[in-house]
Length: 362
Image (cartoon, rainbow, N blue to C red; front, side):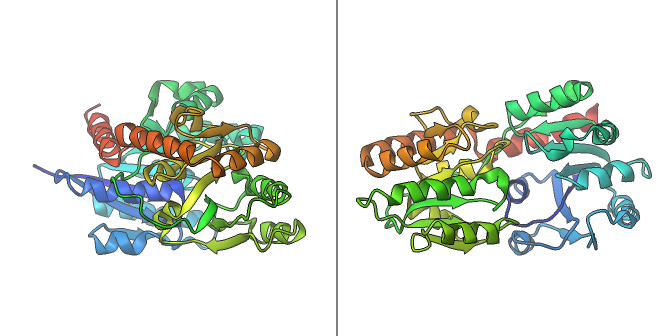
């Protein structure tokens, strides 16, 4: 039987949630011999690239010189035609625009888009809505990573509601003994951008420092446009001795397991992969009740939820968890059981490959 050939197009393989999900999916899909999953990126920023290549996944790059280098659309067309792909599965912006335009130039493949976020700035620009109507019209299915992501997309573009489906984010889950020493009291993992609310965490740390019974050690893992701003903020808040900026790391799981609490004080989200990773690593979670997070975490059962931009409440929740080891244990165990049963990469892969087959039959 002929293998179904799928090309996944994404901006990069840098250390982000969508990138991590695609990498884990591609590796899991190797177990299904009737599918071939290749990856193409717009830019050569390859945090996951080496691992994928070593394990036999084809990864190539369009090498865009800038975000709107539309001359590369002709290269994308050639790759699609020469590769004889059945499906093009697209992730993130501006890969969605490149693929939509390229689809005008080729008969095959059929297009699928994954909607990873509940919000983006383009939705607040009237002109861009006309562009989005064209872009989304070129895709035969829109895969939303959470129920709320689908609801918000359908509200923004009602005409896509009939072709938008939910396949929730997932992670690789393996049970393990929790034997690592706790090097950090608090860990944040994610992009250093306004959406993630790292500044809210830093203000909470400043409040907690007034309580001299806590001798905090905080790890900030990740990179982004706010890196220098946040480092200056740490200095201005006089908490420099408490906060370590660790940059992008390959040992995120080990860092999580060596931390007492994971904090994600986001202002908006889709269904963040890092929440599922923290659950899979048995780290007690405090997170903002935004996006798809409340779909995964019930307050007081799988973690603690707070409203965004409220560092006073965040500080009190951090203090509560640091002083209550039994509550930390309960939350982490409940969260692990939840992610194991409902958010495993095996189930995600099965659902995605089933969708691929349905699209080709339709």
